[in-house]
Image (cartoon, rainbow, N blue to C red):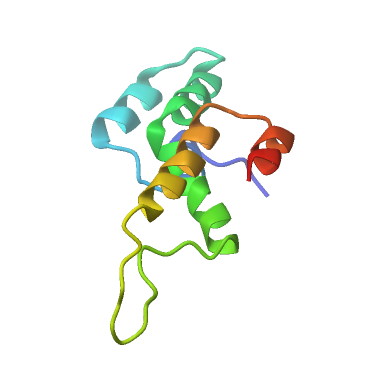
Length: 105
């Protein structure tokens, strides 16, 4: 199996880390950057993106069965549920240690 070309590598990294496709400008910048640490800088930028916590927080929220409402016929909303969602996203974006994150639950 051959290594992925630069365009595919960037696309895979952005989808994996932030759940979004790279913009045309991001693709052009990455393809033009011939430095050996170009990919490492892209990964660092993606990990620093607020989209990172949103992308990966959704998996934790699925496990925790997070919902904004009860989802039944009357669909009663939980008015402060967003606070927990925001806490999870913020914890991931701030690279909070997992043991501390779990302890705070």
